[in-house]
Length: 365
Image (cartoon, rainbow, N blue to C red; front, side):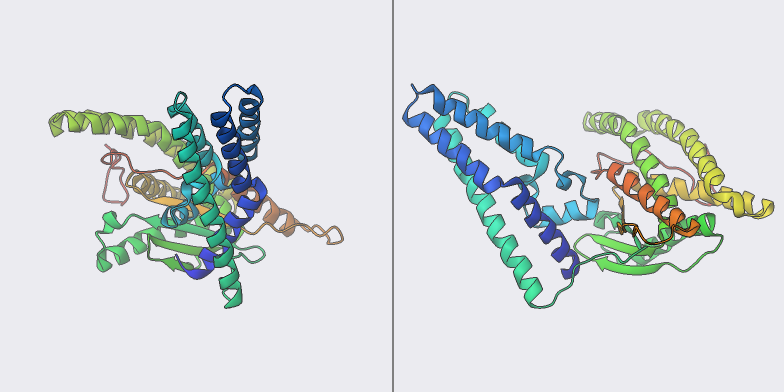
C-alpha cells in the first residue's frame, strides 16, 4: 500500500482504538481475572470480570472496522492487526475464556499477551500517524463528488507476470467502460487514482453517478456469489477425495445455471434504471455489453478478485440551493455508501466453478 492510503487507514484504526478503549478494558478484565485467581472465594471478582468483558463486547458491536473495504482489510492483514479490532477481537477474547474455563491461570497469560499486543499497536499507530503528519504525507481522502473504484487482483491470477497484468487491466477497462456510457451516455477514459503493489490493486477515479451504477452491479454479484460458496466448498472436498474431474462437470454447470438467470435480471434492471437516455439502436448494443461485463465481473470474483467502492461524504450546506444535479449526486453518493457496506471481502475457496462467456465469440452453455 502507498503512504497516503497507509496514513488514512492508520488514522482510522487509531481513532477506533481510542473510541473502544480496548487497551484499558482488556487491562481491567485482566486485573479482575488476577484478583479472581488470588481470591477464588470472593464472588465479586468474578462479577467484575463479567462486567468488564460485557463492556468490551458492547463497545466492539457494530465497529466501523468490520465494514472496512477489501483493500483496507488487506492493509490490516499486512500490518498484522486484523485480530485486534471489531468482531475479530471479540472472538479472540471469547475464545480465551471458552478454552480455559477450568484453567484461569492460562486464560490470564493469554490476556496478558493480548494486552501487550494491543498496547504495542496503539503505541505504534500513534507514532506512525505522527511521523506521517510530521513529514507532510497526506491522507488518501476523496474530493467532493469523487468516487473511487478499487480492484484487487490476486497475484496468482496473473502469476506475477507483467504482460498478463497489463492484459488484465485492459479487460478491466473493457468491463467498466460500458457503465460509464450507461450512466452518462459517454465513454470517458478511465483515470487512475492510485496503484498498489503489495496486492496488485488499481484504484480508479469516477464521478458518483457512474460509481453508483457499478456499485449496484458489484453488490448484487457479491450477494449472488455468496450463495455459490457452499458449492465451491463441496467441489473442493470432492477434489480432495480424488473424485475424477469429469464427474465434477455437473457441479460447474449447476453453478452457472444459478448465476446466469440472475445476471440477466440484473442487466435488465440496470438498463431500466440508467438507460433511458440511450437511443433505441444503441440501447440494444449497450444491453448486450452490460451483460458480458457482468459475466466478466462474476468470473473474476470467482477467481479471488475483490472490488470496492468509496465516495466522498459531502454534507449539503443548509444555505445552498438544492438543484436537480445536486439531488442526483446526493442520491448517487448514498447508493454507493449503501452498496459499499454490503460488499464483503471474499476469500477464494477452492477452484473456480464459473466459466461464463465474456466475448462475442463465446456462447452460453
